[in-house]
Image (tube, rainbow, N blue to C red; front, side, top):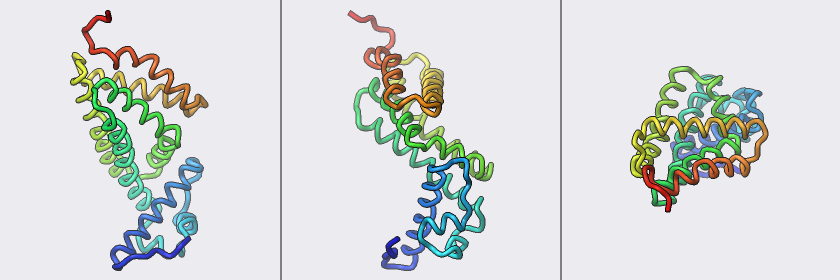
Length: 198
């Protein structure tokens, strides 16, 4: 791995810490059932084993940091896809599809692995943040679309995401899962609730 270039010691340390977190993320994504040690992570990052202990007190401490780093990325990815369209109906569909894309690329398995090894306090706080960050714009899109009860409709949408996510993890292709989402939600997202098609 190339030597990290930074203009200050603080920037150098931030870059090395980020490199360790990225290495941990990569190793867990490749095999969520195999929890890497700090030494494994340091080796994958191209750093000395002792370097890992300069940034993290323990493996749990490192994975707590990875939880707080990973969950906001998930919310940002979904938000970016929702913001790419303007109408509320397509925003709802973009929410579903973005979540399925994350599951297909392994982020959901990574989140499950992190849930198994991170501290309960860090996980609970990050999960609440992720939940709020994800569902707030979904509820707004649903309200703008004309949903009579955006809060409960958001739960319905979440259940669809959950079911399709499980299907992807059990072998269904992203393309097939996305097609199912569009088949089910397409009519709803194309037309405001309470209106009749001509």
